Image 1 (tube, rainbow, N blue to C red):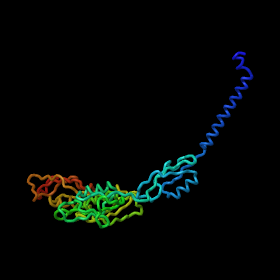
Image 2 (image 1 turned 90 degrees about the vertical axis):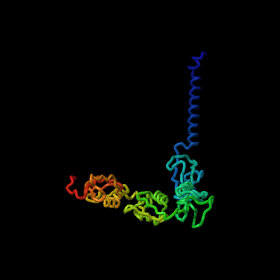
Image 3 (image 1 turned 180 degrees about the vertical axis):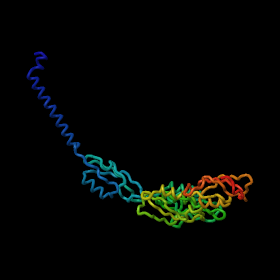
Image 4 (image 1 turned 90 degrees about the horizontal axis):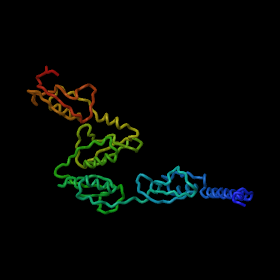
Length: 340
């Protein structure tokens, strides 16, 4: 029998059908077994574990046929110690039964850091080094010493703290600084509109401490300085180094600081016409404005000069930003008929 006759024979066709059926059955069975092994079509939604304590995590994962491994821990003063900080996979992810969830916990024990040596550093250098070590600036005290703003002592809980001592991150370290020769008077910086941390750092860099802190809203998120005492916006303020500035806060989520600062930092344009140079300087200083170019007409002196023109010009209700430069022109006081 030839090959062609054999391929057309009933015997061959019967064997081919049987082999095909067996192959289909084997493939179908393999797919079914694979589905069973991988639980095809069956998934578990990863629950939210962040913020929970470990006992609750164990119970929830056990109920969902999931496992966990704690693969890291972090120090975070804003989170509850022993709680879950992060998880992988993220909440809402679809996973198979017995999947391992990797967790990062908030450390129960505080993170420690060695106390740096600040002695003989400048105030600015000492503040920067404390921040590098995760420490905060406490009270600034001044003592008569020729080395102005140099660190004379570093203190914690009113006692000296030696370099290398292990301290908890976030600890406030008090600094004793030299006040130099004579009285150490500093200008009070404006911190209105600044976030709390930035405001405190600005005061510390100006040799000032934070006094009372008043939170004017129930919310304590995204807080900024709403008011400070003494207020440098009334007039330039000066304090002895080491003095305290009281801060009042409001939440930027509840209060429009952009509009507030625009109003706060703007002043009406004063009317300077007819004023003498000395009077002009006094008026502009009180208004928080800067004196620009003074132009004296021929024959005009400091003793007979009065303003006949100003720029920006005066208009009722017109306001300009504080620190705006005002230019003035003078003519002799007797020139009342001068062409304006």
